[in-house]
Image 1 (cartoon, rainbow, N blue to C red):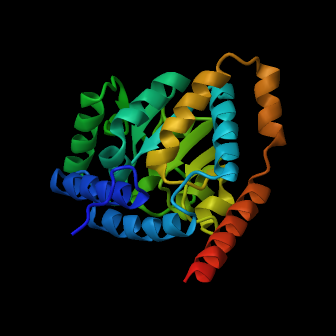
Image 2: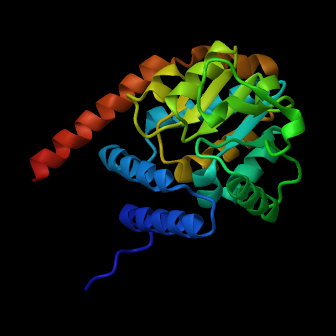
Length: 254
């Protein structure tokens, strides 16, 4: 039996599965999070399992937007905590953003497990666990409506990796700028967010960190131009074209 090279995209997908299963065993990931990963893998395959030009453009816009933000917050769920806790903490430090645990399928044990893994990877302050600072985000019925007064509720820009559409809409209605990672360019989350990075978060997160570091040397006018020049709807259309081209190429090969 031949072994898949570590650099091959399929090997990376298998590693992601292992991380999520391990995260489930450690109480970080909900069963539903494993199902979401399956959908993501399908779209990643359609995208060619690589970061395309349109995704890199979104990453640049996201970095500029985060550097422009006054009170950026990164929302963390179980899948993100299992897949890339170290990178999420690095990103928060690079853009001076707060971290807040926010779960669709919530319970105290899962929250504490996520806090533990984030702290293990260098996080200091983590919001979303103290009921004394809780408030409700209007327009949403799930447990994700419970947010921290000093975190998501007060933020001007919110990063929501692996998001659900209802909360993205609620955040937009609350006047927040939303940046998301979503492998499906047609999802409600992708279509509703201000900036959608259509890429596997495990690939894109390091690129976002590097881009934020590079753009941190730019002045505010330069950052604003990058933001103004970015068109999320146009970018998503390019992602859809990318999927169509990949499908057509694979059909010819077959």
